[in-house]
Length: 246
Image 1 (cartoon, rainbow, N blue to C red):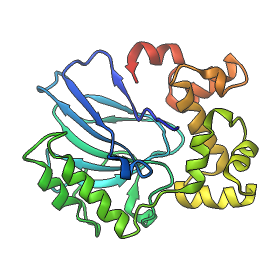
Image 2 (cartoon, rainbow, N blue to C red):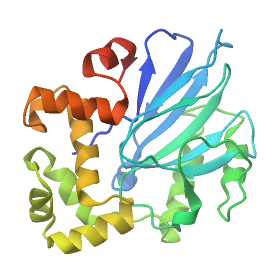
Image 3 (tube, rainbow, N blue to C red):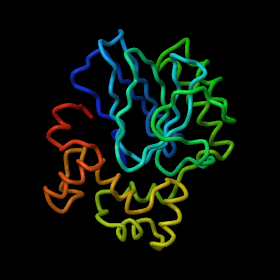
Image 4 (cartoon, one colour):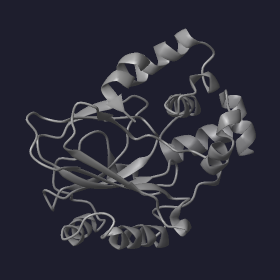
């Protein structure tokens, strides 16, 4: 199954805590992980957060500023975001293709302004403040359940089949075959539900496979792997491994 690495953690910074929790069984076709990112003490310089492309949609809650929240996703390349010297975020990482809400609700990159949409994200953010993961997990679970009840998140049978056969996919044609749809149907479905054309979705999946330490699963040769990795992340694999943990 698909187990994306959503970020690279800077090896030089020890005072940042990452917590990842699996969702309960009934939400595992919708949520990949619940996440917390928090400084344990003020840092000496701004923290550069390396967000990796994974095709997931993130619900981001800024615990340091209770009215700041939003929904975001990346394109097919990574972004380095400056989080400052002190921060506390709680995120919900939704699996690719499950978000059914309006594309107008989602943005790219940094969430840094007060939320003005229709979802109760600010109320959720405020409800979480008194506790940390995993103590406040029930609030996040209930929120996702409410999104599912309202049809804003749904399990995606096409991406589920792709993830189930991920190691057998080496081309867009393979992706269509394991999905049980025509290439044209795959194009429409992925573009609508993930925002990616099939070839860009495949690039993201290949990058994520390579982070599992098996680039040969996804790339024709080493030079192709290095070129594709640098294009997606801005680093060669060796430099990335030296600077970041994933």
